[in-house]
Image 1 (cartoon, rainbow, N blue to C red):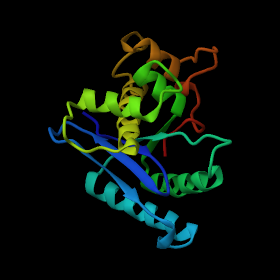
Image 2: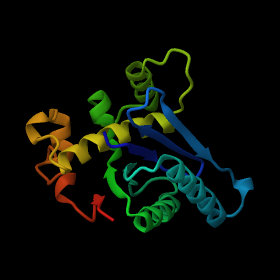
Image 3: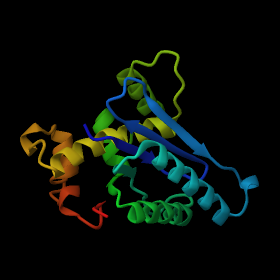
Image 4: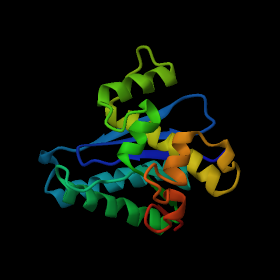
Length: 192
């Protein structure tokens, strides 16, 4: 089975979750705060931590929560994404972007689901009772789960018939009949 790293990028709390065959869940988040330096320095800190994670895990496939326009700190988030994409490009790591509304809809059926609902569903699926997991790590879990299915479809390990209706909307054709991620190479997914 291919390992897939799910990522929810942020300057303050960069959540990640490694999907693998290992019995133990491997996840965490990288945090920075303004006291760590100017924005450029914080981008570099997050990138360097990401590089260390890649060195430890040896993943070749990543899912990232897609940044969206018109939100708080959009420009900073896009800048951080460029640092991360550059790392993936230089290491020939394959990347798929998963839109935030698609993640929420996949998990809860509601594209506007609140964070606490996402956290509840994550803990339920993972069987967590007392284990700690924050909302960024929860998002990273679902990004990785969806990305794993995407890569299986991309490599023809599964067919469209094996997908749930929600996965078909994300990967093949959206509810508005727009092409899904599978048809958006070099925009929604990258084979570096």
